View 1: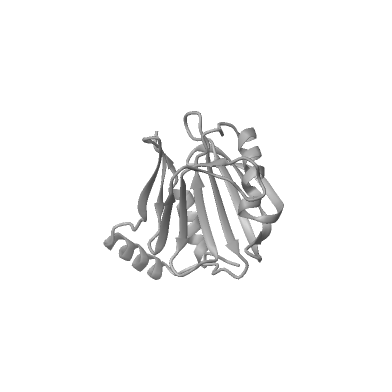
View 2: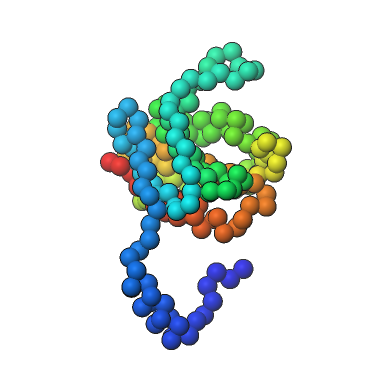
Length: 187
């Protein structure tokens, strides 16, 4: 699939003129805070819903002890329930090793029967990051997931997961990428 097609100089000049006539469009900034400290921020694209949940302890029916669930920022496109992007900053995670252990602990709560297809180190907003992608099942449906750990300043890691059901609108990926491109540390 070709993302960019060659265009004529006249069309290019008209496009540049058009973009120059309008201010750059951006999403709405959302700041992730924990115990009053801002840790990171990201921009939510237009026509996306934001759901915020505070830190709490939950106990799964098959488990004996509750586990801490940190504050969550959950993002979904309006009218689409087949795409989810979530961000958290677990208090007990301060390294990639701890982050990978955390991923394996909470992974089954997010995606069942997960199979990792790729893993790579990269940088997000200039910070070291690790990306793990694969497939699995959620609510009885096949999904693709991407989990990301970002080493933000201080003794914390930002953790994000994107879950896409099979058959999702591929155009939504532009918004998902824009969310990650907008990620900034608050420190």
